[in-house]
Length: 589
Image: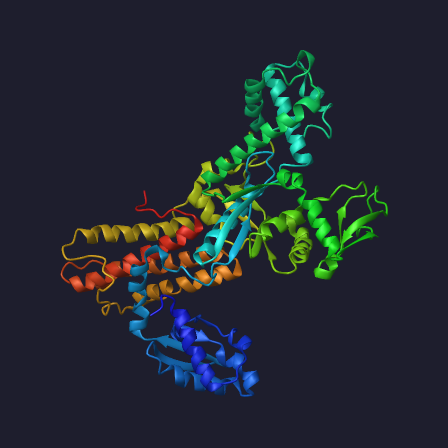
């Protein structure tokens, strides 16, 4: 029997449907679903097959549902099948089918739930990709967690996943970082310049003033002495020091970013450099390809909607026909001065990713929402539609404590650093909490709630369930004749609280597949919370009814069945936490 019982039952449904409606088009068969019932009183599963087939069969859905129910009731895995509502069929599994989930979990271990639905398809998941101009902050944190958990989820579902970070190490922002680092360098040498005097010499002003650049300045002084400074430790010729300081600062910030991300449990398979991309000539090559495909033209854009900027003037530019691919307007690839736009560089980068991928996923902050349609259009155009781009947007997170927003980090100057948040609550709480809401929903991260030992704190609640399982298994290990045995008789597992736990576990493979297909890792957090709730309820029932206690020294067969149940619960929790990047705990302290 397959470990994914939903897959097996769906095969039974499709076979029955084929018999009832022989000429059902394959595209409609693909829409047939088998899902959990909302109310366990109605059964274990339900299917919409009759509704899907009604129109092409030219028969009432209820008539098809009745035929399906009669056929499905004969399947060995199904105890009963009943038509319901406007054309659904509710299914109740045979007890042996239901309980088969326990040995399936024990045989597979933490690999239970792993799927082959991805068929090894190459998916590139790019996330974080912060400018290397400062420490990681809370604004990066949600995208880092969502992207990392999504990548883990897709790997669990059978995709070949590459986790990628795009280093924006070119352009004005890194030049501003270099100037700010140079100020800290002069400061460490004991320059007589004030910060205001130095800022007056900086193109665009001194943008980065956080204390995090002080160590960079010190290390520059240690490495180069006063050789980068001008006379009397003033500002030297930027042509001589700017390239050196820029690369030094980028390397220092990237090292800091890697450390912060590692503390969050986030690592990458690949770091790609924007500077290296530009130096390779890739943007010009992408522009040439789009030109050869007839997708570029010289034109004048309409003025921006709303208030017209004072400096706006109609000017001819090289435009990409992005409206041919679903975008709102055509987009410029070259400025009026002949230099490439950031969008042109991004097209080249996505072309490079597409050359080694079948699907691209960008995890972006919600403030990049306006970027989505143009980038999807460009990816479709540059790859000829062979590789498509998907975008997962993450809304902002507001950090709260004591009912008030947390004050900004002094070290960073203007924001709460990721290391601050990790110091407050720890990696597991940060990762789990960030996945308790859909990524495109705004959220308040309540520090007090994240460390509370209550049911309202989901990470505690789930880890506590695992710790309770482990406490039972440690005690069972001391009982003669008791072991974790996939072949143990499970006939004594008949109470509804026990079966509720089994039903929940049975849905884990389906949850993995559905969450991966929807690109929604938060579904894993929801599943684990529900499984923990079912287990805690069973635990509490055992306090009231001695027959539901897991360990019964006078009845080894009874105990063996419940040890198998508890071990399978612990295994599924670990499997889910593994996807989330959260550690299971052996005991709560």
